[in-house]
Every structure is written in structure tokens, then in C-alpha cells.
Image (cartoon, rainbow, N blue to C red):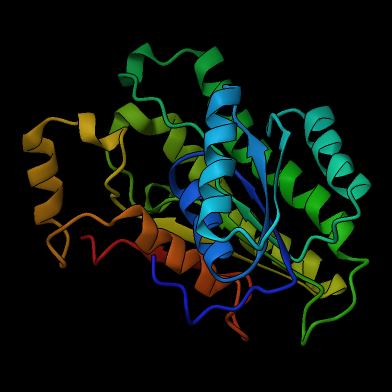
Length: 257
């Protein structure tokens, strides 16, 4: 990802879900731009180590750390941010990218699965934002803000794709409104929060979709193609640097209709 126009020198960016997917791509972009990175560790240690190695290879001059975090559990989220504080790290930016997106036929979705999705995606966004902001509020002002937060939501929270993702779509709709609500409160402490709502992205998970589904969905996009993960990362980094954007959810869907 070309990130020469970003400068994150001498800053720390915390990225949940940073060991894979969009989160890892964001971490690589921050590192290329000279920023230090903390990622939430994957449940697979080898995956976390591979991500840290990849980040360091992009820019050996920066620091990259990982700590465990189950975003839907308050004790785990609190411990994650306590571990960061013990390292003497002042959090400048947060990109919250962790989430789950199972596809289950509508009438086969159980309450347990529904609750798991809401807990991870909706409750997780609240908890991670809360504990990051509690640290950011003590930062010195840099321009208008003491810290900046980007929540990765989804266009599914605005335009539902299919009932198989009803639980996911509902959780992302909650995220989108949460951005607006949180912005009002966090503005009191000069903390900026915005949301990034990606559309279809070429990920390993989406690669398993049938070709006819991919073709159908591509035909609905004005740009006639799906996004690449690094394009979403560039959007996220832009949101960390834009001077007068607050409480907004930016749709990055290539013009989906």
C-alpha cells in the first residue's frame, strides 16, 4: 500500500483484529508511515507472530507489539489496555477492526449465535472505544484532538445484503449509530471518532462465495469490482488524519446500489 502521504512518526496506533484481514493491512500501512503499532493477538500464536514479523519487515525502525484481547469480554478488554499502559504507551489512534460474520440461514440462527455476534461486534465496539478513550483523554492536545478512533463497521448496517447475515447486519447497524452517539460524548474530551463502512472486499472469506454471487454483486457496484484490503486501509488512515470530520460513517463501497 502506498502510504508516503501519511506521516505517523512518533505515534502509537492500536488495532484490534490487527493480526489478519483489514486490521493487518491497516497495521502495515501505519508502519510504512512511520507509526508504532499494537495489535490484539490472534488466538493462534503463530498467526500473531507472523503478523508482527510482517509489520516489522515493512519498517524495522518502528515498534510492534501484541497483547491478547477478547473484544466482547470487559475484563479482557480492560486487561488489554492495562497491558498497553504498563508499557508506557500513550495511544494516539485506535482502529477497531475485530469482528465476526457467520452466514447462517435466517430460521437456523439460534439465540446463542445471535448473542455471540452482537457481543463481539456491537458490545466489543463499545468496550474497546470506552477503554481506549479513558486513556486518550489524558493525552496532550494535538491540534483539535487528544486521540482519534476509527470503527470499521459495514455497509451491511445500512443496506442489508441477505437474511443469512441478519445478526451481522444488526450488529453493524448498532455500530453505525454508536459512532454518532460516542462522538457527542467523546468530543467533551477532544477525542475524535468516525466509522468506516466497507462494501465488498476481496478477502479469503469472500473468496469462498459462489462465482454467480460475486458476479451479481459486482454488477451492482458502479466501479464494477470489489475493493482490495489495502484500499480499505488507506480509507481508515485517511480518517485518522482528516481535520474536520467527526461522528460520521463513511461508506467505502465503490458505489453500491
